[in-house]
Structures are given as C-alpha cells and as structure tokens.
Image (cartoon, rainbow, N blue to C red; front, side, top):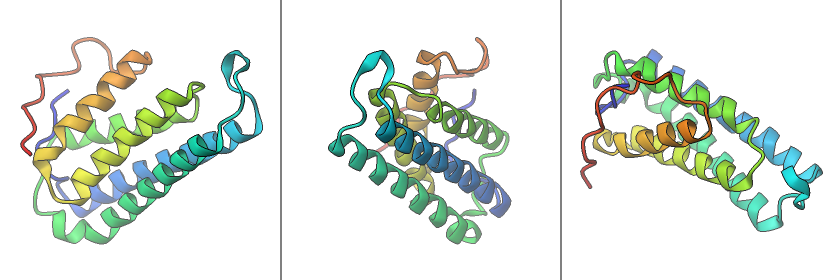
Length: 162
C-alpha cells in the first residue's frame, strides 16, 4: 500500500472519505451500545462509564471530522492523493467494519483514536501528518487479522513531519 502524503484529490474523494468515517462512527456507536448492554468477551463486565464516555467522544470526533470533510471538500479538492486515495478509502472502510466486531475495549479505543487522528490530518489540510496514523491503522488491522494480503502494503511510510 502506498501511504498517501497529500490531501484527497477531489470533492468526490473527500465525500467518499467522509462517508467512510461516518460509517466507522456508526459502527463505533453500535458497538458502544452493545458494550453497554452485554458483558465483554471472556465474561468481563460491560463497558465502564469512563470507557463509554471516551468511546462516545471518539464517535463525536469522527462525526465532526467527517462533517468537516464534507464542508471543506471544495477547499481541499485541488490537492490530490492520486491512486493512494482508493487505498485510503479501503483502509478506512476495513477499520469501520472491524469496529463493529471488536470485542476487546482496548482495540476498540485504539482503532477509534487512530481514525480520529487520520481524519484530523486530512481535515486540517496537513498531508504530512497523514502517513503516521494511516500506518498505525494498517498495523492495527494487520494485528487483528484484517489487513490486505502480504505484499499489498507497498513502500514504508516516510517519516511524518511535525
């Protein structure tokens, strides 16, 4: 997978990314509700109030980032990711799908935070900050057994500039 180093290429690309982030927020919301209603895997207690609040805040942040993408699509449309845009969309879609099925709160919190970080880089127009959270998401999904087949990862990400 080629790591994107620029903002999405067009308004349509931004909207597609915003749609994926919204879908991830929907999955996070559904998982949060399920976690509040039933015990975790292995008989662990349901989500604690602080865990639920943190996940809810991540859900809200994802929705805000997605809404920002919708609003800023015209401004950011001129800077493109090229072919990497489809990979970015595919990765965020897989992350959203995975959120719906995660049983461990730690994985849920980490993946949600990684998506929020990625969305912040895109919405903020900071393409140099995209590779780091994108690589975190890719590695997290790989650890969960949800990454692309071996060899599809492409070159390593360049160091993020701060």
